[in-house]
Amino acid sequence: MESLHTLLDPRHPDVRIECSMARAEYALRAATMAQAEQLAAIHETLVEARAFPEIFVGPSAGSTQDAVAFAERAAVADLAVRLGLAEQTVRAQAEQARVLRLCAPRVWSAFRAGEVPAANARVVAELAATLPEAAWKPFEDAILEAAAVLATARFRARARSARERVQPQEAAALHRITAQERRVWVDHDIDGMSWLTAYLPSAVAQRATAHIDRSAASLLRAADETRTLAQLRADVAGDLLAGVLGSAAPHVGVSVGVLVPVLTLLGGDQPATLEGYGPIDAATAREMAGHAPSFFRILTDPISGTVLDVDRSTYRVPADLKRWLELRDQTCAFSGCGRRARDCDVDHTIDWAFGGTTSADNLAHLCRHHHRLKHHSRWTAEHGAGGMTWTSPTGAQARPDPPPPF
Ligand SMILES: [Zn+2]
Image 1 (spheres, rainbow, N blue to C red):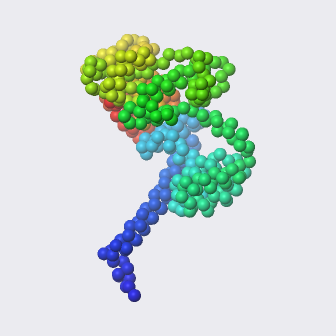
Image 2: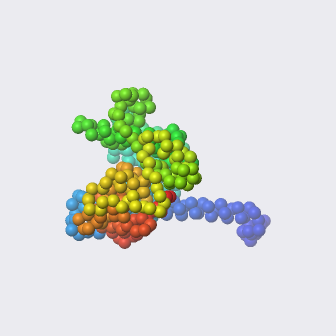
């Protein structure tokens, strides 16, 4: 019989393999427990922020509903900066912890003990969140055992059918509710290509979405319109593709900005910048600058930024400066926010009323959410050479995102 010494001898490959497998198992369990701990801590931070809003919005704001909402937003942004996560991810993780605790407490405990994989816990939270209270326990009963043992793809299928069995609502009603989430989005790929769930040259995808945006925005202005902008964009895109919208479509001019270095236009190969996408190759840029009327082009001299130096005595941001800022910023100026500049407000970093000027170095695009956060919470922003530096109510600093490549 082999001695214990031989069984543990690392000179044997089977011993080494057994050890490394055990290490992997142990690490996975520790990572799962750590993931659950992160979710719990995020959730608890937001509960505290709602209970003590003054920490995030200052004592003068009181505990009104608005103060509580802004305190929560400020705390979400604070966590996002500290953890290097998107705000949406922070919110989603807090929500996941809240739902699991409330709707599937046994799955939550098993997840915290490292016994239910993080991906399966996420599936449980997503599905449980769509169920009414009466269905929570039957749903958890049906999936508890499978959550610990099935791989995520199989577990998802199992959990979906469990949800359908315990779901008291009609499929048609569910479709109506889910259809409210319809929307259009673009994912950018490499080499000047993008997905509008058609794989297209980015210039085409940007023009298409600009057209959809303008049409949706013009429909939104109708007095009796009840759909949201996101819903309208989805409806316009669907109608255009289905051929429903033809000549009846609202006729709107679209223009997409493209920033072309002068030397590129003369045959050089410095890349240009397509609004909402980033660098594109010189040949495509020359073609767009030469022939396509729907591209708004700005020729840049790399040295003279003087096009920015416009009338500083007015509060209103002149159209050409606004257009230039859209190209400069590309997105909301809050660290990590990806909202496109053209969907953002132009904010005076130092308030006009406090001596801030209407100039490029005091203006930045902020999405509605971050704009309001800046004005209604203790988040502060400062313009610097490399971009905006943000400081959270609890003192965390978000360094500026690197400037766009021009
Ligand atoms: Zn933003």
